[in-house]
Picture 1 (cartoon, helix red, strand yellow):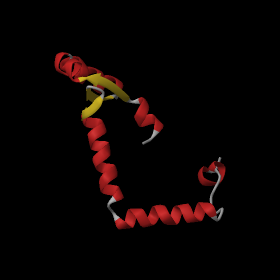
Picture 2: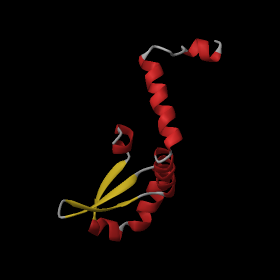
Picture 3: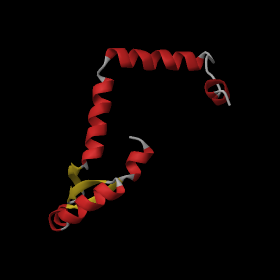
Picture 4: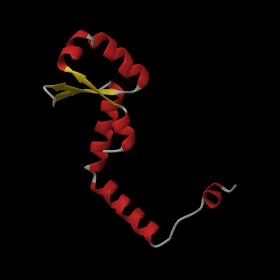
Length: 93
């Protein structure tokens, strides 16, 4: 899990989830956070704002594409061989 994603997580109890749901929706949308809902110290579910959910769906769809996975593999191999461009070369600055 990426560090950015972990920083976007807020842990909330099931009791807080029930009593603060309306506030959570506002905060999730405004601040781009998601909630890990816990009961007795164990995660029982996750509340994601639509933006997070759509991004996850896009990532899962991309990762299920053989063509996409092949392009990632080829790009990594090119980088290992040093077949890369500097920003100046790529953008002509």
